[in-house]
Length: 388
Image (cartoon, rainbow, N blue to C red; front, side, top):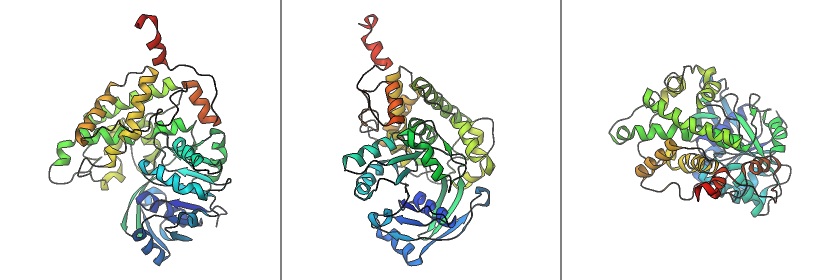
């Protein structure tokens, strides 16, 4: 039994999977959900049945929980690490709920952060009077799986070498040293800008949805990755990814391609291929991944405003063209019949639009802002005499 105590906030597939795996590994785990119908059967049983795909490298068994509760204060009291495993649109609400219950020595980990997750979470905690704590984020959800019943979790995938960073960045090494007791293969990211821009979901989910639109609306099911990622879909994914990589390079943030990332995460489970199309159709864990049945789905309504729109916004500020990204956002807006740029988690939404690229990089690492103001490349162009 480890000395680390985990609180897992979130009762969806990700939260339940996280709680079950950590408990089977021997850590004391408290699970929180605001939904009594989620918590009641787990509390009655005292834990969760965890079933795993052997290739994941995880262990199954009965995951006895220390606590399953709808009281967030009770869940986090005395916990060393608080894992927030919720969709990006819910992170603000969780920060507001969590703020009154935090103590200075605790660590919060968003799994995943999506763009700007740790930054926004820290801002909300501060605005609600919480003590300063390290808020870390992963680049993606670590597990792939689903609930087979209210008390039975099945995990088929585990991403190895997942990267994590904390805000402020000076806390990353300390946070990672704690997390490696549970996840020994996790690696240190340069900053939360890297983790924010490394979530592959917007780059991969959205073009599959857009380019399979007729198939999604038609009767019947299809395998989202095995059948939905044809060579031309892989080409579009790569086009979007090249724009993301260009934005990262201009911002001074080290990024790897989604193809490199895919192999790094899933080669241990049999994924292989020479490009992103091949790694998806040759990944055994995707044989159970069915496509969504509508466009009112987080693959569009979450991944666009918390992924693609921030990339487009950064490209505009940095003077990096993102035509494929902009066109894809426009198609998503047509499919969902809503403007997903409105309210997106951009630098403006985070209150950081006045920082230059250099100042932004310093800010995420130090946690403090400087008084001097410099310009983004787009502002330099806009004020150049040649453009007047």
